[in-house]
Image (cartoon, rainbow, N blue to C red; front, side, top):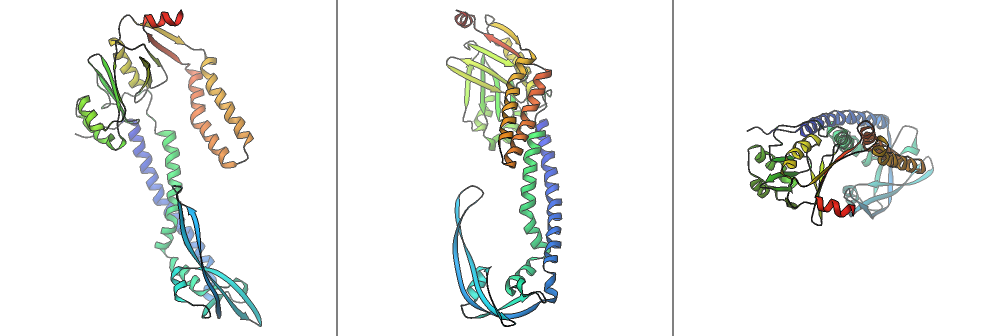
Length: 362
């Protein structure tokens, strides 16, 4: 049976394909740029002049740095100091060299120096120039361009994922719901109704594909739970809950059961509405129902406050990169929320046990 994908999964696959193609194209373009730049920088070698220098000192230094994960690492850098005479003038200089070159020479030995014609001040060690020439190949330039292109495409993938890989609020995707169960493959949750109980559990990310396939094959919640390697699960008797609430523009149902509050998440708002319609039928008829409608001002006030705080922080900050990050957060998260609340103010449905409602009013 072919695995059915949610709209979000389809968009994620499309974004991934686009970023892979962009990575290949950008790697080629960046490598061509490096090839041209390196060829121009080494053009002087065609008409270079050479002379012998004497090695004054060979030394090595330990340097500490942090890798991408923030862990401290160390590496050894190798240096060579040398001197030579040109037109009765003595020059002393030093250059970083490879470990191989470091092991091939001793202090007092001679080493060749290259320089552009009639420009002794831009001299370089011949071994370093030769290494640059050897590395200026299509393969070498691709290796040099790869990490740069990968960094750009990973950043682009992250941004496109945040902006476009979101489940459609109006979709009820086939293969992700039944009359008594709902699979949230994005947030790795499964919710089901079983004999008067609401059951939900999380799904380990490494098991998401296996659970999705099993769900679409009609496996029972017990079988899915065994497959999920869940770390967070709950069974809530519907006749024992104190209250249940749901905002129309949210994909979460909040349930109060005893002294615990459960946030039950669904794939999107439409899937949640589908589930809520079936959960409501199983709630005790004695529960009091209320529909709370907020005004536009009440609904937009929280995102307006957040937008104002972000604007103030951006104005106060001097670092450009932090301004860009906060501006992106405002445009990607706060503004859509503000616009959504402006055109569709939050409506909250609540079901509360009569005795609990009377206790609150007392």
